[in-house]
Image (tube, rainbow, N blue to C red; front, side, top):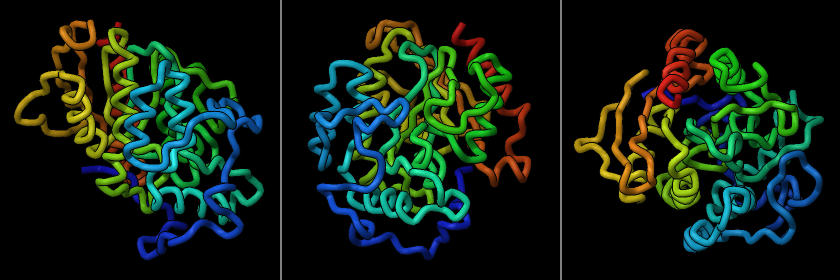
Length: 296
């Protein structure tokens, strides 16, 4: 298993606040308000807000488009621990980002609305996506990821620093198992399960366009198979073992109208993995190059 480790400012013994961040409350949450003009904010002040797992299931099922699904994802408040943490970080901030306004909300998926490749990660980083408002953007993992996508012809720029920076993905969409930044990059099982309907609905929308799913890390790999099964897809038994560049072809023609989806595994481009050489540029390029070839 190879997953991101907590940034230095999120030491393992750092307590999760048991109440909203100072100066905030559920009626006036920390973070960017919907409709305030933040680049690429999909929500409006009228976007319905999920307050518990039942709300998530209902609002995901009722979303009539990817755009509406993204809007509802981006204002979700169903997991109290994650809400407290993401808003605490948005108020306290990292020293190097004290001048920044933090997004402080769940991260919606972004990229191509009709992708042939879906990239699935674990969750946003506390001072990455939770700050920038864009999935995988604003930390060194994202720097490594976008550079590889660009080299493989799947992104228009080699970097992505914030929402609205002009980056565009080519036939690719980025998403995560959990939409809020979790303490120590470790969501609880109940938080993973509460968030699951957002991803299940997204997979349903993507339908016949989707050809490849790249799982960044063991956590994403393990979370994907139940999601595919929930759509009526016959997933392999026993569940395929995770590994870098592992490739599994899953027939899905009767379910979503395409011949098959290929699931690719990749070690997560976390700072720990890239610094130690567990993941190199050529290793990540090989995975995305293979994804592009399969999608074509």
